[in-house]
Image (cartoon, rainbow, N blue to C red; front, top):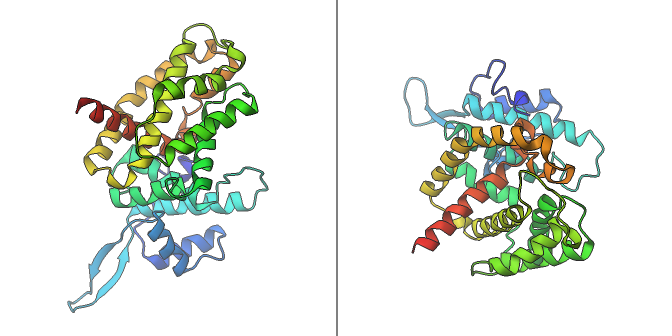
Amino acid sequence: MVNEMDVEVGEPPEPGTLADLLADAHAAGWVKASERLLRDWYDIGLLGNTARRPLEGGGSGQQPGLYSSQQRTLFQAMVRIRVQSTNTPSTDPFPAHKNSALASIPVYAWLRFGSDWVDNQQLRKALKLALGPNPKKSEKAAKLAATQYVNAIDINNAPVHARNSLRDFIARELTRGHDIDQDALRPLVAAVTEPRGLSIVRGPVDSGMLIDSAAYGIRAKIKAVRSLDSITDEQLGIARLRYNAGRPAYEAWTEGVRDSLGPGLAQMFNDVGPDNELRGAVSAVLLLVGMDLIQRAEQQ
């Protein structure tokens, strides 16, 4: 997907007006695209702000605003993915053409390339879009979010009752205001990552450490989701710095240990590589923001 965005290869497009983006969409095969739909994309975070342009020769009016070259690149990528996914039969419950899935693209661009690509205002809207309805206000939304968290750590086809117990615990915690009880969460995570109490993976990665890390990650993400409306620009900036500072070492580590991991645990590290990294961008932001929130709370 990164190459499709022309981020690392190819010539970037010129800045463009709303009409230019609409022409891009039609050329890519999104025949139902309209100015109204594109303005809706702005409202939900799939498009950012335009640069204002005064009328040539003066006057009180404005020329049509220009989307930056970066914004146009992201837009073209989202349209291509949308068209391709729409035309490809799939049983995926989270198909790539849904707006909530497309939201990972501006989140990824913000995370890797900064505010020149996506500013914090657009990022916040894109994160909310990716997360869907507020789980604090909707039991259905809370269960949906909880199911995604369980899917991310179920590396060995855990029993249904173990998955459901963890899902229901996470869903309840998403609707509450207090911090998660780590001691209550850990055995539920262990039942999913190591069904029947068996240690599936031996070698360089300690299974107990995996359980603790997975439990802490869930706790951090839930804290971030709960706090989404109050996260500061400073906290967002810290999350982005930590992500980019730690990514090279993380990639090198996974490259070194992947071959010695069992097939189940290896799935836990499939976010390495541009396509998988893009899909994990929302989760990465929530994890890093949540970790920062937990650390701040513990220091008080």
